[in-house]
Amino acid sequence: MPLLQVRDCPEDIYKKISIWAKKQNRTIAQQVISILEKGLQLEQPNIERRKALLDRIKAREINKEVNSIDDVALIREDRNR
Image (cartoon, rainbow, N blue to C red; front, side, top):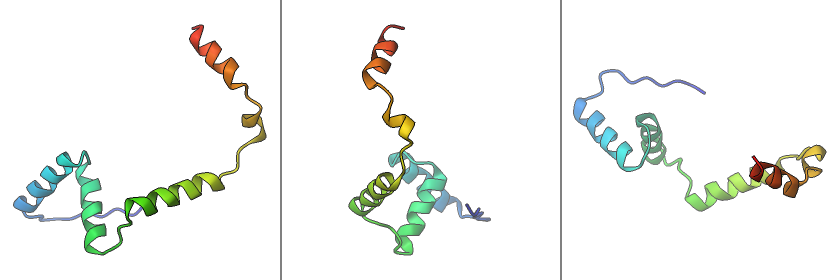
């Protein structure tokens, strides 16, 4: 993933980004990306992002060995620890 570095950021802008990041439970880097996406009109609505994620999950191939695992046996083993 490319790295973006901003030099000489005005202190008031940095403080506002920092405050927004805390309110949104994000890092400053995540908040800056969010702000850039909104400013560049690249953001996707939540429904579209979730749908894309579900499509990626559905497209994954599951190993045959995973399907043969006995779920009940794993839960019992975990409970017996």
